[in-house]
Length: 384
Image 1 (tube, rainbow, N blue to C red):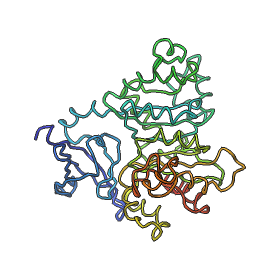
Image 2: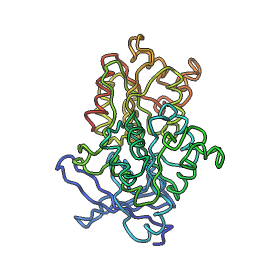
Image 3: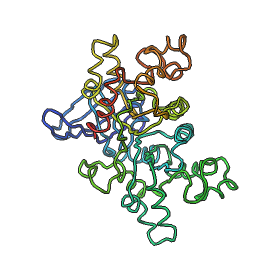
Image 4: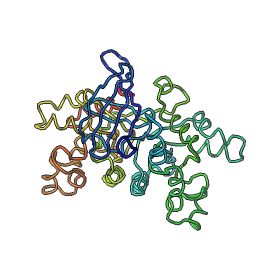
């Protein structure tokens, strides 16, 4: 087959029953959006060629996680050289780190990133300590400004991102602009550093310089090994120490609106304490939503939507600490479950602005006040 007829990827799936990792060749056929899977160990077809609307060609890049018929598949490598030659630059990954001084503008920055054609592959809000900040900037050790960089990066929360696009490394650096924000305003006034930065230290964000560095930095913040995830050198997802928070989940169909939704939260008086992207299989989505079984008339469809792709979970609270019951306040801010009804009755709510229907309503929010901390704990402790 020609490269136009089939793309082949090495994927792995963890069998929860046997706790065994199984490797497959996933073949994707762009002409009709069909797939098949070949079991590499058993040397036989695992899934016959079938049409699917669960994945698209844009989802197929190294490091991504896709959900196919309730199975969470991790894309490890290209399956053949033809696919490698056709896709290596087409879906290149780069690393981006929105620094502490610009985190309050992350919604606007994320919107500009997505409008520039980048796919948001992974995201995680982190609080680096000086050890981790020093490790991240280790190549600059010995430079006069190294201590200032380490001090600044460990001064507050940052947002780690994996971004994907054709020639992503170069395009991200172009979007960032010159290292020094003051110079950027003269040279490239439309760049992120010109718009949101202050100087060469507080300059909005970091960008990888080459493919090797991008792979290393992505692995530093998003390690493949669970053992590495628990290392003191790996920045952990930031979580709050307060119980006065609730859970907000941006559903897979609304991921391309992440920046706008975050800005809407900020404008509504809400503060983000934790943020991370997740790929839930059917079992985990059902486990998380079990409390709503028998309550939501479209429960099955809601579960399917939540595990249909990447979602983004946030722990949020109110800027005004004197306001009690953040769960109720946020549920009111989200609006009616049915987005079409929300557009008629409460057009300024999140589901009215960003949702489409009863199932594709953009946002999951906690229903009962006592469940707020429990839903936050599920994403930011149980799934870690």
